[in-house]
Length: 152
Length: 386
Image (tube, rainbow over the protein chains, first blue to last red):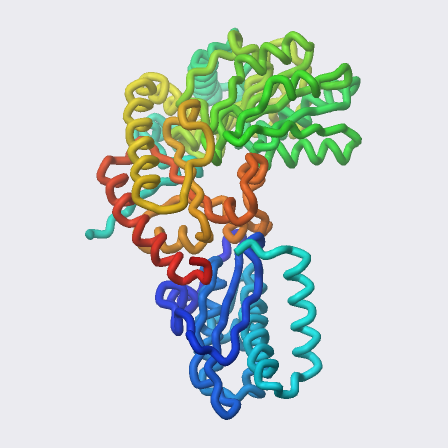
C-alpha cells in the first residue's frame, strides 16, 4: 500500500518555471475553466492566424499540478493548427509531464478544457464552424459555472 | 539571501530529543525483555514501563498511574476512548463531538454512527471555540460521551476544557479530550478539569513515534479494541513497546521541566511570525484565537493563493510547513476545521500552518519573513485573479 504521491521532475520544473505565463491583450480566443471552490482556475489565451496557433499564454490559480499542466499544454499547442489542438487529449498532457499522481489527473483534464474553451471562443468570434463535441463541452462548462458560481 | 532548512511543521511530528534517544538506547538490545516474562529480563523492563507510567500520571495530575494505558498512537487512543467506552456502556446511544476534531475522533464517531449511535457535531465560533450554551443544550439523557479536542492541531485554538469538564460531570456525561497537541505544552490537571478520558501522544513532544497514552479515570468501564494476552490491564493487548514507552516518559519529564521557559520563547517567536506576515503580505489574516492559542501555532489564510503551490514553493526554498488546502489532501476536500470556523473553500485552500518547536531559532523566523512575501507575490503573479 503506497501512501505518499510524488510529482515527477518534469512537473516540478514546469511548476517552478512555468512557460508562457501571462496574458495576451488582443487574444483571438480566451478560455477560463474551474472555480475557486475546487481550488483550480485556469485561463488560457490564444493568438491565431490562418487557423494556426501562433502564441498562447496562461494564468492559473491552483496546485503545482494545475500550474504544470497549464504550462505544458501551452508548450504542446504552440504552432499547432486548430484541428490538431482540438485533437489533443489529457493523456498527451500527462505523458509529456512524465506522469501525474492519480489524485491530480483532473488537472490534466482541466488544462485540456481550458484549451477547448479558448478554441471555442476563437471559433465563435470568427463565425467558424464549431464541432459538435466542442459545442456540447462548452454548454456543459457553462452550466457547471452557473451551478457552482464563480468566486473571482 | 542564503537558503536554509527551516522545519516549521512540529505539529505534524517532532524530532526525538537526543536526551530521549539516550534514555531509550538500552532497551533495544540490552534490556530487551518482554514485560510479561516471569524472569529477571522481564522484571527489569516492567519496572521501566511502570516508571514511565508514573511520570505521565504525575504530569497529568492523575490519581493513580494505573489510570494510564499505553497504546500505539493517538489515533489508537482516540479509537479506544470512543469505541471502547461505547461498547462497555451500551445503555446510552448519543455521542457529542466538536466540528474541529481530528479525523481519528471524527471517523471513530462516524463508525459508531454506523453501529446505530447518534452523533452530534457541535459547531464552533469563528475563532474555533465551542460555545458552552450549545454544549449544554445538546447534552440529554441519552448522551454517553462528549469528546472535544484540547488544543486544535490546525488553528491552535485552546478550548476551555475545565469548563467543559464541569458541564459534563454535572450532567453525568463522560468527557474525553484529545490533548495530542496540547500535552507537554499546556498544563493539564485531569482531576481539577474533571476529565474522564484523555489522549496524549509522544511524537508531538520530542518522544518517539509509535507510542501514546489514554488516560482512563479510575472506575470508568471501557472495553479493549485489541484482544490478546491482556496487557495494560486487559485494555491493550500487544507486547509492550518498552523503548518507546521509556522514551515517552523521558520526553514528558523534559517538557514538564522546561515548559514555562520554552512556552515563553515559542510564544515570542510565534507572535513575531504572525505580526511579521500580517505586516508584509497584503490580504491575509490569522485563523484561530490570538491569545488562547498553542504557543507554537501560526495559521494564516492568504487570499487568492492556493496552499499546495505555496507550500511547494516554500519547500523549494527550504521552508517546511503545511496547508488546509484540498489540493494537498487525499480527499481533495479543504480542511473541515477551517470550514467549520466559517471560512469558505477558497479561503481554506489558501491557508498555511507554521508550527514551531524546540529547535526553532529567531533566524528561522526571519528567513520565513524574508521569503514568504516573495513567494506569495510569485504565486499571485501566476494567478488570473489580481
